[in-house]
Amino acid sequence: MFENVLNFFIKKDKHFVANVVNANKTLKVRRGEKLLTAALENGIKWPHYCRVGSCGTCRCKLLEGKIRPLTDFGYVLGAEQLKEGYILACQSILKSEIKVELNFKQKRIRRTKI
Amino acid sequence: MKKFFINIRYFIVPVLCSVTILGLIVGGPFVWTGAVLFLVGITIDTLVIKFHTKGAGVDENGKSYGIKELQNLVMYFMLPVFIILQVALAWRVYQYTNGADFGLVTLFGWLPVQTGITGLELYGATLSAGAFAGLGIIYGHELSHTKDIGWPISRLMMGLSGAAHFCYAHVYNHHLELAHENDPATSPRGRSLYKHFWLSHMGQSKFSYDLEREKLEKQGKSFFSLDNKWITGYIISLPTIILFVWAGGIVGVACMFFLWTVSNFELEALNYMEHFGLVREKDKPIEHRHSWDNDTAFTSWFFIEIGRQCDHHVRGETHFWELEDVGGPNPGWGYFTGFTLALVPPLWHALIKKKLDHWDNTFANDAEREIATKINKQASYA
Ligand code: FES
Image (cartoon, rainbow over all chains, first blue to last red; front, side, top):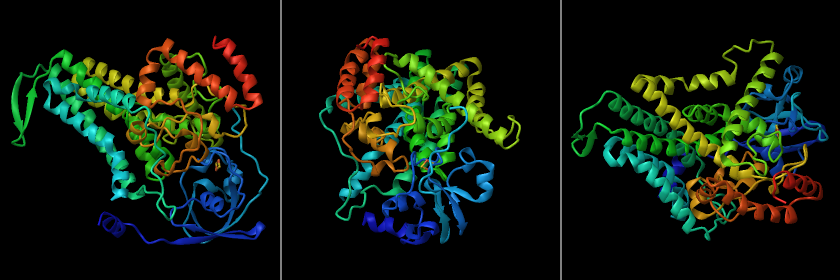
């Protein structure tokens, strides 16, 4: 009963497809799920460190499609990177199918003062 | 039904906070309700110290028993609850400073309310409100990770205690630098809770200040801008300040500062217990061993699994009901018990020293053990 009432309010499962073009990998990302979480669940060795949007290790270049950023990427990514379309996978929710480019060897971005 | 009970056990604070508000409204000796409930919490947590839990758990399909929509809704709902808590206290401050007559009136035809309040009762009311305002941390913390709509709600909740800077410092500093001297929220060995309270609070505010300065410089904007989240964080606290100044002038401000001190002291006590004395080499990955888990049944349910720090710091995006027992370091006591021990520094250091000895020998890697040995000498732990 309790679950039926709740299920009434919860939307049905839906997903979008993300394509990592330079690695020829495709994965399904559930509605509301973060890109990094989906990638790790799918066994993709996506570089990451903090998983909360503060280190930049999970950045990738958005080539096509739309995402909803959960944080202001400007705290971590530089102006150039933002202009080039870089996003943080751990703070990105898909709004459509997307194509991204990912450097699997990249390291964390450092703030100058620390 | 199992799912129902697993979910409602995380509603202890919403229920007790509502009872505390009721105590403030009813007045008389009932203004002490929040403080008494806090003491009851210490007692229960200590009595059930042997009962440890493993989180909300998963069903036969591997899906968490936690219901995201329900838990999020309750956390959002806590914002108006904490606002009402402050308004109720401000109303009592107003009664005190305006010398309201003592008497009994009935509210809504059933609720007996004592009008007027003595100085001692006002102290009790502020302590009670502070004890529960401080528990806003657990929601402010969780929502700061949920992001999205959770982020502004988290900032508003923390802003009620003058600590909106926490959200940025926690995510951008603590989650990157914990168990290292670059993290003001991590207490080194030898430090007392009282000293940590001040250093951690100011250190996090300073971090947030620097973060905004750098961001705005990068964007070519003035420091004095509404894009400065450090400044807007304090602006968020303005309604609280105005409310208490209006309610009681100097007395109101004194009550507000007492309220903020109690609530921020609780916040920093959690930081203190979560990583006390743990060591990590700079830039080395954050592992389970860099946090203390506190998972007695009462702590886990009361503090919505915030004590599952080992997993939280490795999977920072994970909702509290999905956090798991990962076999990390664990002092064996819950937060209420740990808090009480930390109030008496010699007792805390005597007990935690043994836990840290165990950590050095069992969890630390060689490089960390070397650092710990040096620190132990400086802190007279050796
Ligand atoms: S993993 Fe650190 S920003 Fe995404």
